[in-house]
Image (cartoon, rainbow, N blue to C red; front, top):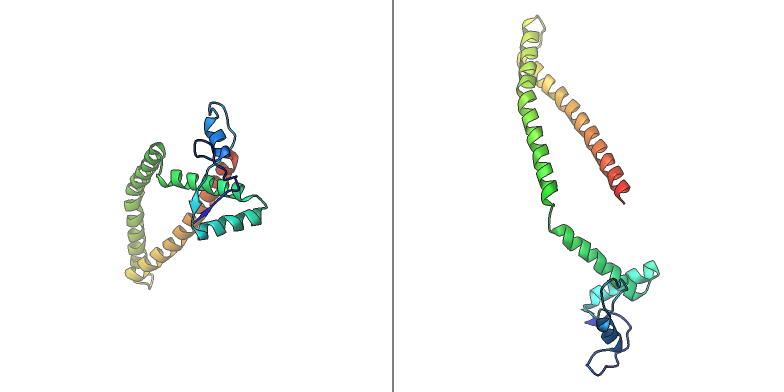
Length: 165
């Protein structure tokens, strides 16, 4: 285990380093300065922080601070989707389900009727073969439409996140 930071280790009368004693005696109301925090980390994490500090051209302390800020965001994000957003997503999914229940049966019926009528009107193609071809073409069209919709959705989400930043 290694200790991050380069603070003096001289002890104060209370058994703390001078920097820590000063940090703890400061009032925190309205004071947004960075505070000294002593942590012990394993060799792998220390090397990762050192490599990050070197790559970014910052001190080990600054690199460790950035690691901790990232960890805080990750922990907060791990807690899940906020309830308001979850409710919105559920409502959207219910709307999509209702829409599919409305348009799904007529679409399937149209395909079947088209295949049946075409096979009865003198085409030399069987109803099953025509239905298979209709389903194949419909699947290709559906794939294209959904791909374009997803691309548009991602573009809008990216634009929204950039506006929020």
